[in-house]
Image: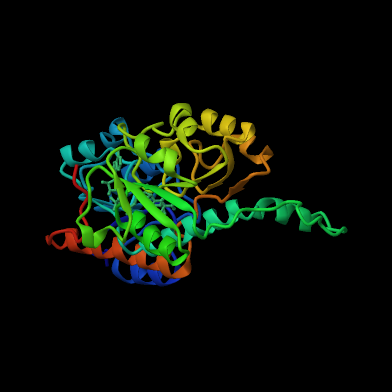
Length: 324
Ligand SMILES: NC(=O)c1ccc[n+]([C@@H]2O[C@H](COP(=O)([O-])OP(=O)(O)OC[C@H]3O[C@@H](n4cnc5c(N)ncnc54)[C@H](O)[C@@H]3O)[C@@H](O)[C@H]2O)c1
Ligand SMILES: O=C(O)[C@H](O)CO
């Protein structure tokens, strides 16, 4: 008997509870552990004629790729909140609904920003290297000192879901929080943070700068040499949003010159092969784009994507549609 369940193409495995639900509800072809390439996705879609595709960041679908998707595809559900890897207008033009996974990863990514902030401020990379080298001698009283984050001034760029969750955490560390956003938030959503109408105006007041806005043509490379030079000398830079927000040559220069004391980075322009110069900088704490990588959050994200696929294929509204 033929399988009448909805045909869904997964570009990579999800967590076990999500896979169990998918295997019960959908007709799926073989799923690779790691993310497919764009070419592999297009070939698999042509062969399988899916009604839905579940994908994620790291697999770009540009306008020319979207044109090659079969007409069977009704929904593309990305297991991520960020959608910069997808050409949304091109997908909409083909009548394909696009969904993402907001909210369920907010707290997890805010934790990641705090982890990067603490690790950069407290020289975690250097301590880790020292320990793995065997340690072997006592440190001088003023050797390898970090800086405390309590009492420091934190500037948040992009005060959306994650930016606000970072602001709440930072207040728990007695930090003075400022933010810059496209528009000022209502007072009850500001988490006690001070609004600056431009990033440029906020920078001279920041001991730590943390990015929480999407990558887009408007924000591409916005953190450049000019903006970095406006931070107080010895500031700390945190990016758990997107590598494309940053001019990485300028960031590396600032880290080499001491304009920045340290950085904590989860995201890079060229993933999964970041600029090798980052690896040579002792004052950078690096993680491999794992802002949402907890068992709980990855399962919540996968379940939300499945909810979206089921809704659209049943003719209902998507729970979390992405607008153009
Ligand atoms: N490292 C990770 O694994 C990871 C995990 C989750 C999210 N992210 C990134 O974090 C981003 C933010 O997620 P979110 O859920 O908080 O999104 P959100 O839409 O709730 O918040 C984004 C905020 O940025 C603001 N913004 C947009 N353009 C701006 C600009 N040019 N200048 C100033 N502010 C601007 C928006 O007004 C909004 O307040 C995502 O788009 C994604 O790229 C990364
Ligand atoms: O945008 C997101 O959700 C992350 O970058 C991927 O987990």
